[in-house]
Length: 489
Length: 62
Image (cartoon, each protein chain N blue to C red):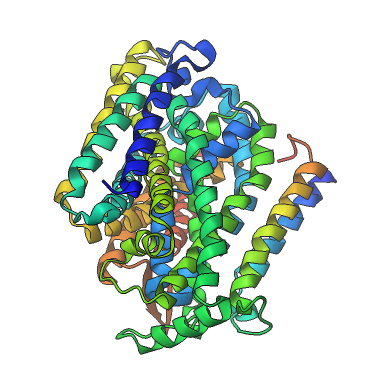
């Protein structure tokens, strides 16, 4: 066994007892859903910083963002403005939501939507959107892990499956036992490893490859010679896509169920506010990681599966034992968000979709949520066994576009009750259909070229769909109000 | 009027969502083209602006 494989195995096994021991943290009664799923809403600034950082900056992010830059050049760097402007949005939206949720004991976005509009269909629509968006996201964490397992000792992707299964069964077991406390504790290990790895990578790799000026020059030349040429700068036709990808993604980041789960676990509004200012540290990390995509190009890494470039780059540039640390960072970095995503999706199913079977916040509901967490984890694992990787990525892109369609009902609802629930439902449905149609038309890429009035504009699918959604929601609300007024007269 | 401080948060959107402003090579920093270090710098500027807004406003302003 190579030393990198040994370190990886030790690290994954070492976090398992932490996951189980987390159940004893604070001596809580884990039969209460609030304790199990939200850690009793007790996390302070530091725990929340690690938890949210561990949750939002997933292993898949760390593998996919450099892969995107490696593949398409400057356009892939949109992740950086995205991870920048997400925080002003977060500060304004989340402190408001946290306050309302805390007053009323809400555990999901759908809980809030149900109470605000008194509309069961809208509640289920919001909940199922979250579940549908979470599933492929969990599957992608597994893909991130598989890329690492496949690198260790040169196993092929097929041989990585047993290791993947073991890691994921352990994850399901401690998440079932300890709830959100498990990923919260493991997040400390994850983030420490990630920071160590990325800082080492930034210091070592560019210097080894001859400095940034050289890396960018080589990358630009290589990108221009590709069958689909790109550049380290944006083409003017990409401006709108770049801006709408960053903006649309920033709006949707915090409405994903896993974000909501971690946010509601915070102890106070002040914790959320401080974290809005402290979490961008992770974005800086992400920005440097994105540039590893160019390091891979300059380092002469050629692969037909770009998700492998980060593990390959580590293997090429680090001694074997440190590559093991980096691999452990990615694998544990996948386990933390995967656990939170399972909890978030299970919460939506137990609290909002199957609510009839479990009266208000009873132990039954907790049991349902726990069982569903395991079911969701199992489903994600099967997804990886049977669905080819490109499809998983397509589903995740589509899931992101669908997620944004709850924005009017949820986020605008935090400030206004002006929208009619039926209108919001129609807007949501139109947004959904439009997302699917545009994704299909564009061959499952993030962007769609809109042809209108003789011109064409390529932009982010989720953004176009949200515009349509808002248009339908607004127009129908006006119509329904006018109709009601007419009926009264 | 404390709420006015939130207007500071418009700046990151203006700074990052208009690519023609920064889609060029010069001035480079440590060999990194302007396009890249400019956007990385906005991460830090945004964090600082957020810190300022958090310090200057109270919890129930929004």
